[in-house]
Image (cartoon, rainbow, N blue to C red; front, top):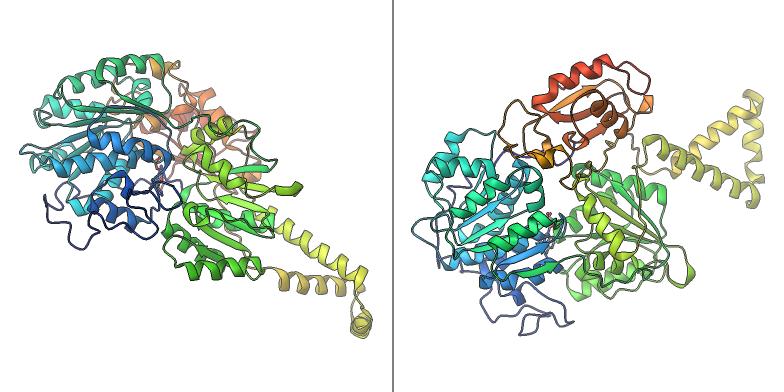
Length: 603
Ligand code: AMP
């Protein structure tokens, strides 16, 4: 199941939970001036890297970040947080995966704590889709918990009555899709007179979806002296015009700076696998089984991820060790000793903890997530492929992280091939290969004579081939680690947007609320999952389904949501409003030369 589809319901009670607690939340948190261990008084770490303390954030926020296991700000956070906390406008070019949500959320919360008003909300975040509204409001809620931040996501397709009630009870930050925001504004339920900050997140998507006029109307309803923050993965000309009209002397930040020169990346085999978030631990285990690294570092974003992944990998028979900033120097030295001495073969680490490590026998670097900046990618994978040895870099990417991976390829001058996660059949074939190799070695080298008597006695009773087969089976089972026959869903990257030139780009309607028009999942409309009765057995790939759907209906590639290919069937997400049309069309056509059963998925 992919994370986009598995969007949790809007966090109930986020609007009412925790009333304003100005000045009461500092107890038990770090106070100003208590630089943490390894931190210079100016807030930078002793090795010169940036820290969250150094960004001037309030103790309540620092506490939340520590609890989440964030060890250091990502590049976009380092650059964006200080000016935003000062109240500057900002124009940022950054894709998903860079940490941009925290980059604007932390300053919004910081300013909210400093200027609580009589008539909230103090901030409005506009996002293109319902999924993003929920995701961003959850992030704000997590970071702002100790500040008592009241955050409410509002989007089309959900009952408006509850949203009206929540707004009435007082909300500090509203995260909204433009259509619903305008609706609430027109009803007088959303008061924007005291809004100090407006954030436009994924602004290019909002323009592509025809929200330009809505955005203008909403911005016009906010105070002129407000702070305006605009994040976008691309900067088409229309967006530049909007920025020029609404932003005042903005700080400009581009995450894809050309700091890593093309060609700097060492010669390393670089592969990315597209994996839904929930399937990542299993996928990584499988990839490692097939790759069989001598020694590998697996990079994670947070301490929690490091700990839980280490546990999973150990459960799979690896000798994995965790390394993160929450460990003492002595613990870290012990871990490094085990890796260098060969009693551990996997190191699961955060960037901070792994900084400066040079491990001679390292063959593989794994990015458990797409790194937050191209520079981090180059830095991480530079740990292998030294001195002419072969190096392998593996990246697990979620379907929505396509753009960040592309940016990395461009900026780092890297060539990353996208592959599907090894199937159960691949894994079995690989294991048999290993067993065959071990047997061949034994046949060539070992003194086998002492086993002759066993074979000779069994040969009286069984055929020699059968004896050999039983022996191979025993050897194979003795070497094999865990049984793994769980299929991992095959997903592809989200279809690329068309940069505003497609039909969606010309529309001006509110795609999250307009019934009777195919509102793609990327457009925030409700999506429906269809069951299609052909799968991997029939050689079906995601492209076959997208091709069949776009060929037989009026939908475009970007209307098709996540796709899972299983052994005998596939699940595909399409806009609810077009579901019946798609079912009829697919029933009437052939997919890869086969007729398939097609229906709404009952799950
Ligand atoms: P975003 O680009 O905002 O979608 O964030 C991508 C992911 O990175 C989210 O899962 C965040 O929770 C995570 N994240 C953001 N900032 C940090 C950080 N400084 N350290 C570790 N993880 C982070």
